[in-house]
Length: 579
Image (cartoon, rainbow, N blue to C red; front, side, top):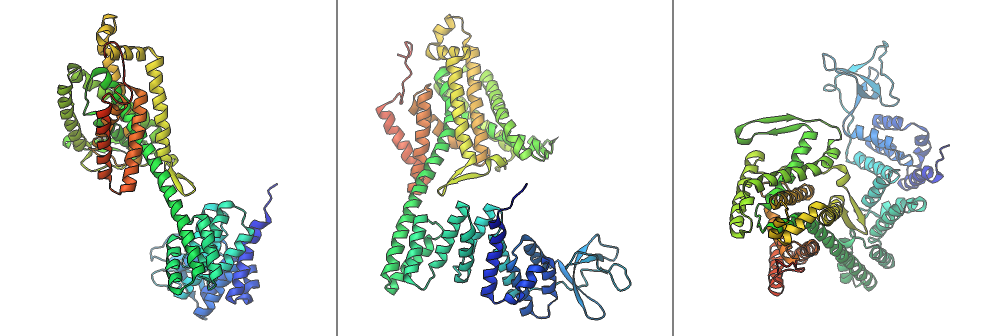
C-alpha cells in the first residue's frame, strides 16, 4: 500500500493560506480551494477589470500546483483566446486540432476542456489571426510570478525546490520572509533546510533591527554563504557609515569566514585540477618514457598521437549519431551513422579502445617506415619526428579543417559532485581513475608478462638481449606501438575536458618530455611522481599568479634547476650496460 506523508500534503496548503492572508484576498480562499484550477484561471481571464483579474490569480496561492503554473503560462504566452457570442458573453478557449483550409481550428473551453459548441450545436471554429488573445499587463504578470514562485517552493523534486528557495531571496524582499519561515517548519530535507536558512538570513540582512541583521550575518558566516558575500560587504559599508558597530562587527566576521572558505575551495579545486592534468600527462608520458628509454628515440611527433586519439573519439561520436561527412583533399566522404538515440552515452565506451588501437596502428606504421632506421641516433630522430609532426598536423587540417571540432561528453561524464562548494567534475574524476588503471596495467605488462620481460631486457642491454635470441626489432615495434596507443588514450580523455584541434598535442609534448626527464628515463614510478608534481605545480601557480604563461615559465625554471642538481632525474635506471 502506498502511503503519503501528511507533511507533503499540508506544506503547500499552509504556505498558501499564510500568503493569502497577507495579500488580503481571504474572501476568495474558499472558492479557489474548491474550484478546479483551470476554472479559476478561466474566471480570471473573463473578469471585467485588471484588479479583479489580479485578485483571482492571487487566490491560486492557496493551491500552488504545477497545473496552476501551466495554465497561467498559457495565458501569459498568448495561447488562450477570447470568444464573444451575440449576447456579449466572453468565453476563454484553447485551440485544438489541425487548421482547416481557412486557417480556422476547433476549440475547447479553458474552464473544463470540453468542446465549445455554438447555439446550433455545431463545434465553434475560430481563426487565431482574427480573434483576440487574452492579454496581460505588468500587474497580472507580477501576480502570476508570485503564484509560480510559491508553486516552485512546494515542488516535490528536491533539486528544483532548493533552486526555488535560493531564487526566492533575490531582491531581499521582506514580504517573502513569512513563506520561507512557514516552509521551514515542514521541510525535512537537509539540503533544502540549509537553503532555507541561507535565504531567510539573506532577506533579514534588510531588517530594520541591528540585532537581527547581526544574527543574519552570523548565520551566513557559519553557512559560508557564497551568494551573500557581496550583500554582506555592502552591508558592512553602510553600517560603518551609519555608525552601527554591532552590525559592522558581525558583517566583518562573516566576510572573514566566507573568504577563508573561498580560499579552501580554491586550494582543493586547484589540487583537483592539477591532479587531473597530472593524470593526462602521466598517460601521455608513460609511453614516451618506455620508448625513449628503450630505443633512445626523441619522438617529437608523440603529441600528434594524442590528436589521433582525440579525432578517433570525434569520428566515433559521429558514427554513432548521424554519420561521418568529410572532404579530405577535395574528395567527399560520407559514411551513414547508426542514429542511436542513446549514441551520446554509448560512443565513448567504444571510443576508448578505438583511440588506443588507431594510435597504436599509426605508431606501428611510423616505426616500420622511419623510426627503425634511427635507433640510438637522438639528433636525427629529433629532426625526423619533428618533421613528421608538422606533416601530421597539416593532414589533420586537410581532413578535419583548421578549426576545433566538437566532442560532446556522455551524460555519465557531464555532471559533477559538489562537496562543501567544491566541484568535482565527473569527466576529470574519470580521467584520474582511468589513469590509475592504465598505470597498473602498464606495470603488470612490464613486470608480469613475457613481453614485459623482453622489453626490460632490451632496455637494459640491447646487444646482450640480441645474443640471447630476442628479436629486438619486433620488441621495438610492439613497444613503440604500445606507447603511441597510450598517447591515443590520453587524446580521448582530453576530448572530454578541452578542445580538439590539429595542434592539440603541441600543448602537451613539452610537458610530457619534462615529465619523463624529471622522473627518470624509463622509470614508471618516477614518471608517476613527476607527472603529478608538474600538474599540481602548474595549476597552483596559475591559480595564485593569475597568469598561465608566468606559471609555466616558473615550472620550467624549477625543472632546469632540479636537473642541474640531479641530471638523471628522480630515479635512475641502473644496469651493467648503463653504468
